[in-house]
View 1 (cartoon, rainbow, N blue to C red):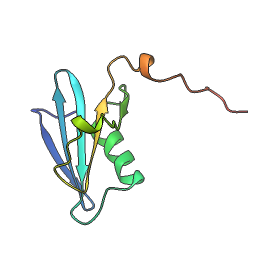
View 2 (cartoon, one colour):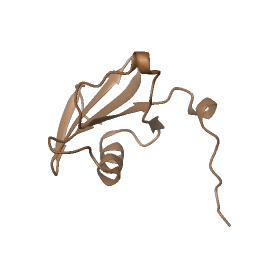
View 3 (cartoon, rainbow, N blue to C red):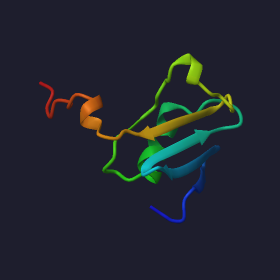
Length: 93
């Protein structure tokens, strides 16, 4: 990970902003013409954030929801992801 933060990146037609807020990583990804698709979000996550963290897109209560850009998505690092997520199976039979 490069310093200092926040750091900005551009790939394809995506703009990416990476920051570390209060010790937790945050990634914003946007385009001018549409929402970023799954492959773009996935690429940005693994290209610009540390691999040893778990991130998620969060939907807070409506009263806390803020949308300042119609084509921007956010990934937030989960503190203590073991409390949030079940462990996926190591092998699917």
